[in-house]
Image 1 (cartoon, rainbow, N blue to C red):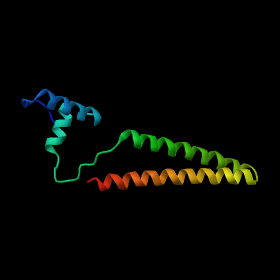
Image 2 (tube, helix red, strand yellow):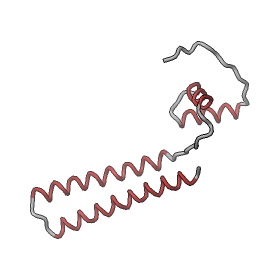
Image 3 (cartoon, rainbow, N blue to C red):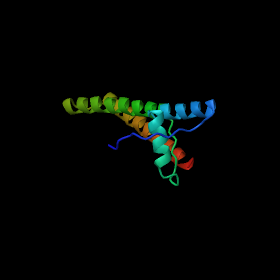
Image 4 (cartoon, rainbow, N blue to C red):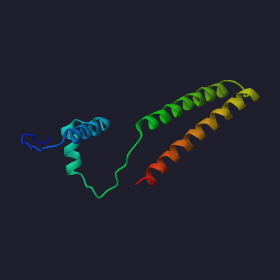
Length: 114
């Protein structure tokens, strides 16, 4: 890691500073690291903005359904499959499919915002 022993001083309005601080917080970075990355990055590339809460909620939903599928798969392997079990497995598969479609739609919408 490079030694950080040089300083850059700039003047900002309070609203600009607050805006930068919020952006840094949303990126889970210190203000210094956020500014360094912004200043040294290639600005010709796309700037992708992600709704973290939506992405987190979708991930939780996928994990829940994956857990359900795992439990159903264990059940099916340990016992002979019946109609009720088959229907439960089908419902879980449909839920995972719908959630995967939601994630896909979200990613496409994010790409279209570029």
